[in-house]
Image 1: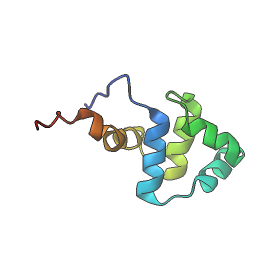
Image 2: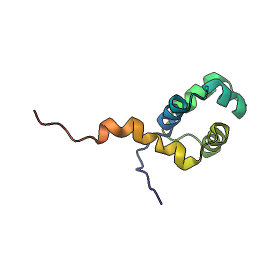
Image 3: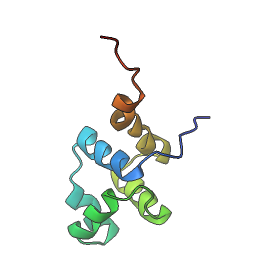
Image 4: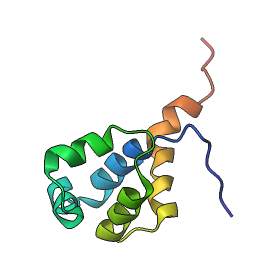
Length: 85
C-alpha cells in the first residue's frame, strides 16, 4: 500500500492530472454540476472536500491513488537533493 505525505496539495494533483490526461477542466466542472469558476477555486485548495475529489476521480476515470500520484510530478523539484557547485 502506498502512503502519501500530509503536505500533498490535492488541488495541484488535480491540475497535473488535467495536464497529463488532456481532460478539459470545464468538462469535469460540468460533470460535478458546478461552474468552471467554482472548479478553479477547488484546484487552489490543498484539501478539497472528499465528495468533490471523488467526483473528480469519477469524471476523469482515475482512482484516488492515481489522482494523488500526480503529486509526485509537482513535488519532484522539492524532493531533489541540492546540487553541489
